[in-house]
View 1 (cartoon, rainbow, N blue to C red):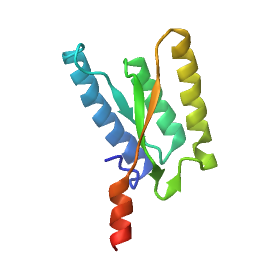
View 2 (view 1 turned 60 degrees about the vertical axis):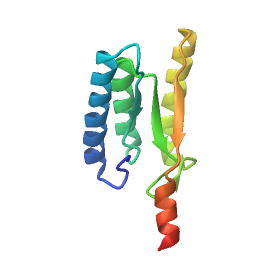
View 3 (view 1 turned 90 degrees about the horizontal axis):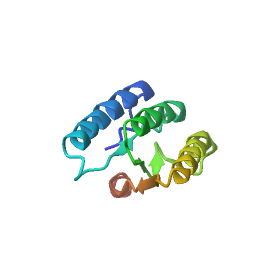
View 4 (view 1 turned 180 degrees about the vertical axis):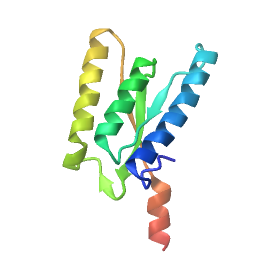
Length: 116
């Protein structure tokens, strides 16, 4: 779903494709859909760039997996991304809006690995 296995630039391309489709749906049905972006977490700097693009287009949050290529969310390499999310959340809170970070567990990968 998140394509974390892909090269970072390819992951960004997939994220942009998905986010552009979500944006189209949001614009077509603004009273029925809000956007949660997907970002290429295999490159936190690219993830930040895509998050900024999406937030500037009206997305309300981001969804990420529970690990990236067998790296957990608490790895130091993801700190920059979470710091940026916190800054955006703090800014949105000041404007009385909420930015929620939605974590989606990649259980299928874990189950598959357990079965092998």
